[in-house]
Length: 39
Image 1 (spheres, rainbow, N blue to C red):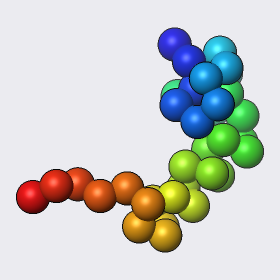
Image 2 (tube, rainbow, N blue to C red):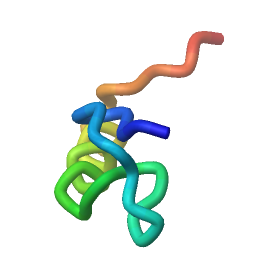
Image 3 (cartoon, helix red, strand yellow):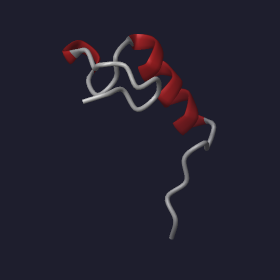
């Protein structure tokens, strides 16, 4: 499985991400409204 942010291999500690950095990038996108669920 690859990291959805940078496409590197995932780390079990941060799954589904490869690092804390990528997990934080994803969290930031959610908090800033970068992801939208259509409906």
